[in-house]
Image 1 (cartoon, rainbow, N blue to C red):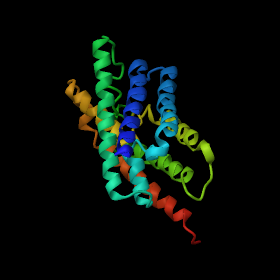
Image 2 (cartoon, rainbow, N blue to C red):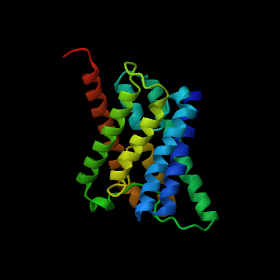
Image 3 (tube, rainbow, N blue to C red):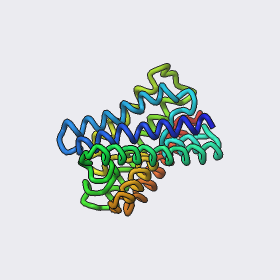
Image 4 (spheres, rainbow, N blue to C red):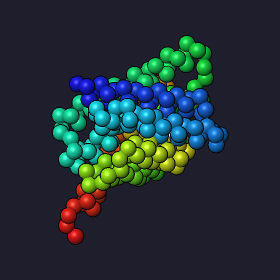
Length: 229
């Protein structure tokens, strides 16, 4: 249960800080774009050192799937992690909705930082490709950094966090960068409750693509790491 609580807190924080920054900046100007990318990445750095020793700091179903397929976690824990992550994301988006409504602040994203396909002109194929590739890169790096065969000491969290910054720099202008089904589900549901149903209509893209990208990353890394030629 402690692991699941840690995953809830980590995902809650990721959505609160990352999506909250996007809502304030709108990601329209270069400064807002980069602030949002760093908000997501630095949250991962902080949470990696806060809960990494408790749950591994997945705070992302795609990362958990990569670990499951790599033999690093059980199916039972995988289910528990995903449920905790989705609940944490929903809570984070819900708190943002409360803060912005009570404070009469404008949400410059129009959907609590939810993901969409506007940056690729609503082309589903392009959105799938972007999310599969960015998730592949992110999960591939995580599997490498956390491999028992590697020894990155205390720098693992920094590497993972800045890799998330990296994929956001490309992805924000295309899909808003999900690479995390929980983050997309939570914000899409809260946006729908608030009256904006567009994010939830395409949320399946941000569930399927990250999971596919994570699965490919797990299979690829496991193959490359194996002792065979």
